[in-house]
Image 1 (cartoon, one colour):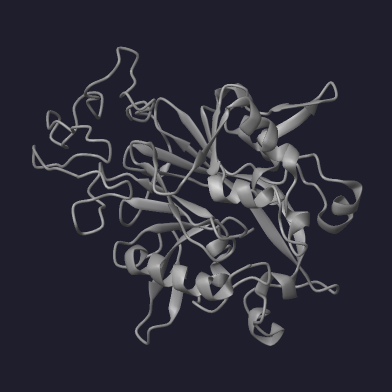
Image 2 (image 1 turned 120 degrees about the vertical axis):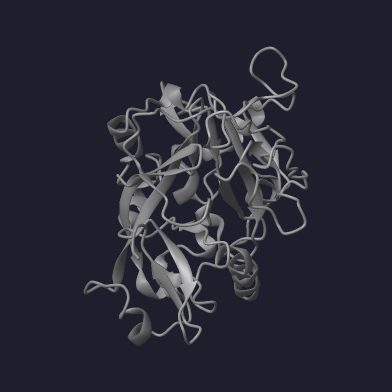
Length: 358
């Protein structure tokens, strides 16, 4: 499973497997003669879509972005999509048990993104990750309570309602900081309230040009090395702008918490074998705004997008930062290329460059 180091974070792709998806639905209005140059379709016009979750190890907490398709699909849906159900097996291969997950973030609540949020146990729906705090967009959950006839099949209430009712799931407005260096941002198009997860390994330097991060927290530079998004000071004691613990958590409650219920980032294991990210210092799990590397062109959206014109505008907004700042884009449904850098070539065409490619 692909892994890399991004600043103080270790990122790993943890797939829930792959599933067949109609190529026409996957590429919407794009003619097959164009998309088939990028993605192979079988005799039934199905392409293989990935189910890529992102595991973020902060050194102290384990954050899981998306939980795949899960194992609770109806027999009818299994006929359409299969049910690979490989997430827990692949997490175990990465040394992670369900009890080890501290935070789960859902970008939206379609069944293929939050299926492993819960499982059935002794006839009851229970959290798959019993210790985790779950997060999802509030607007998405409100919509999921009464979806349109067009997309009602995409929502399975057992994936999220029990968590909301128990208080284990926090509903987000958009723009919140989940942990220092991990924020969410709304990118409408696929749905009205879908959120991307932005991982900033720079210690808060990757701001919006106004000294602000996505949560409007000022990134101050007091030691020449900057502050992270939660104003955690990086002290220069080791020649790299970091102290022995990588960061100093100020104003804690005595339990390692910063008063917002979040825990300060601590360093990765020194013996980590993950490769270093080749470019930039930010990764973004962009979810279904850009589901695969084949969807990077502005007008290449999915037939599932509820607001295709907003998809285009959201892509423009994303690329305005991601391209010049060399963000690593994580593709939720790419079965072969889970992440890459999106660039423009000499004639302005969108292209992808793999991690480590020069």
